[in-house]
Each structure stands twice: as C-alpha cells, then as structure tokens.
Length: 297
Ligand code: ADP
Ligand code: MG
Image: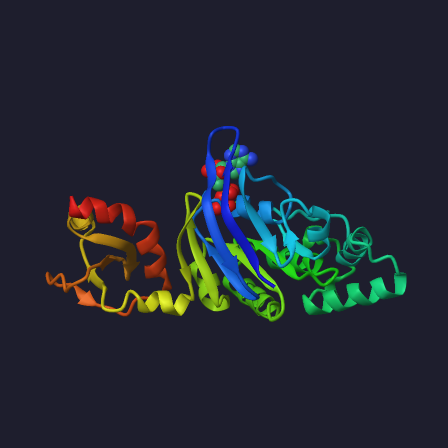
C-alpha cells in the first residue's frame, strides 16, 4: 500500500499558507516528517486523518481517495494527535475498552482480548487499573499508541509523539514504534532529528508547507560528504562567520561555541572537515538555504 499526496495546498482563513503545493509518496514502513514548529506537519497529518479539508490537491491510499472516502479511510486508520488528552479519572483499561467499542469492536470477548494484548504491547498492563491522571508523559503517549492500534490499522499517523518525553521514556517509545511498520504505512512527524535517525527508513524535511528534501536518511547524509566543516569560535565572532560562511549549526562544546559550515571546498581559516550527520542535513535545509543567499551576496 502506498500513500500518494499530490499538489496539496491549504491556506487558513487568517491567510497562513500551511501547505504549499506539497507532493509525497509514502510506502510501507516508518516514514519521518521532519520540520520545525509551524512547518505544516500537523495540518498535513490532520488532512490525511480526514479531520480537515484541503483547498487543492489529492491524497490516495491504495485505491482509496482519502479526501472523499473518509469513512473508508477511518476504518483502516490509527491516529495519535499532537495534543492527545486522556481523562484523568479513568483507568487505561476502561478508556481503551470504551474506545474499542467506538471503533466497532462489539464482540465483548474479542474486545477484551484486543484490549489486553494492546496493554501488554505498550507495557501498560501492570498499570491498567490506575487512573491516567497519574501517568507519566511517556505512559500517556504509550496509551496514545494503544488506542491508535485498535482495529489493526493499515495507515498509522503519529504527530510529534516524543515531544516532552525524557531520554529514557523516549527510548522506550522508540522500541514500541519500531515494532510497527512492516506491512503498514507509519507516518511520524517530529522536530527531533534523533527520532528520524533512530526509526525511519525514509523521510521528508518540510518547512513552510513545502518539502525541501526527501529520501533515505543515510543517503541524504552521503550527499554532504566532504562538505561540512567545524570550528570553535568566540561568541562575538558568530556574526562575522555568518556573513562569510553558510553556518548550518551553532552548538556549545564545553562552554565554547562551535559552528558547522557548509562549503564545497576547504574554507581554511582553522576549519576542520567533519563527517556530516542527519542534524547537519536538517539544518542545512532549514537554515542553509536563506544563509546561502546572504553569504553569496
Ligand atoms: P507544525 O505542526 O509543523 O508545527 P502546523 O500545521 O500546526 O505546523 O501549522 C502550520 C502553520 O499554520 C503555522 O503557521 C500555524 O500557526 C498555522 N495554523 C495551524 N493551525 C491553524 C488554524 N487552525 N488556523 C490558522 N492558522 C493555523
Ligand atoms: Mg504540529
């Protein structure tokens, strides 16, 4: 099964163009939609999840026309929205059972089995009787996955699921997500480069409603081979370097600023060539573009 998005455009009533003539083909496996806040990720995901209309363009999933056959799509869809609220005074077991009824699992015995299996899968079984108000962020997100997996979805959409999780919770969540995929299309949106690095075989970097780059993360890194250099600088030198180089990253190492620059040839001046990583790919797309113009002008 493949999800195909063609020439999708969406402008909100306030004039914000959240999606701008966007094209993507997404096959089975884990696909990362990587972009900063405001890039249009949630808008795109809500549109695919049949919760919002587009102005122009088409989305198909196999034979299904996603924008018109909404009920058909909902039967095969699992969706974890960015703002996923749980009822604090209800236990995971009760809520999951209730959501399963809404999803059409009317056979009690079968439903109990499904709920139990999902609570095990998401490592919530031992906490199933507790009110979710007391759950950690990671536990709530795992519950979010459990509800998204009710009724064996063929298309799974998870919107920024790791935001706000601490590193240990994030790792546990990666383990859970990495078990999805195989025969399903899983779309994960995130502004966290590591999410894509850890989980995704394919990705698209998006900003301002447009796709800037798509492909296999490892291959996109190869395209930056011999093009990224780093240098430790003084704080007050940053502006100078930004004017003369395409600065794609500013980090701190042991309290000192370190910059990464994009360059076709060795910039000299104390710069050291480095092996690019996915973060360099991301920032060269997000920041490098505008700066490239500045540095050249
Ligand atoms: P992301 O999920 O990547 O952060 P969003 O899809 O939430 O991006 O937002 C894309 C742009 O659309 C942003 O500029 C945001 O402020 C705007 N936007 C999102 N939802 C609405 C809305 N309901 N009404 C008006 N503008 C919106
Ligand atoms: Mg969002």
